[in-house]
Length: 112
Image 1: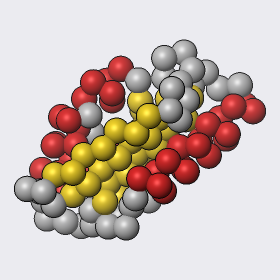
Image 2: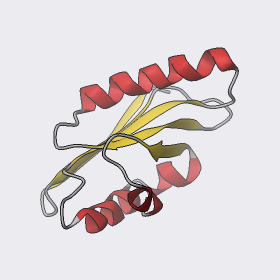
Image 3: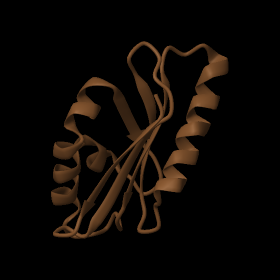
């Protein structure tokens, strides 16, 4: 299942992407990065790399990657994260697990 999920929220001025490259045992894993320059192409390529990194180790999950095109120091970051989590809730609660990546803090990830 290769699929790109995206958000373009003009009110909060951010874009976000989750690319699911592969699913194993109903799950996909990857990091979530935060930078103004994040693109869907970057997230797609990194998700493909996650699949390649996980497969040789026999891990029971597929590869995915998340990215928000936003400055992680944006004063509205927690409002943005709430919107992102709400819009991606079905995916994040059933299939994709996102870990900390570029620009992310533990506190930010706790809000997803």
